[in-house]
Image (cartoon, rainbow, N blue to C red):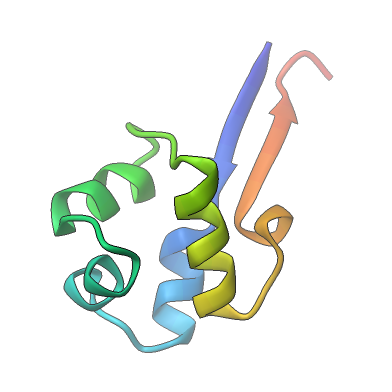
Length: 70
């Protein structure tokens, strides 16, 4: 079974950003950022690309597809 993990919280903290600041930069609500960080919502590709640009990392650094059966 595949599971999507993310490092949004980690990279947001490294950039010393609040959830509200990140939300404003990527054009979503703070609640969306909270849901992504908690793994309750999967970011769209455009949103993931915006985050990668802001954090100055690759999308693969932020979002990790893990095979739980391994």
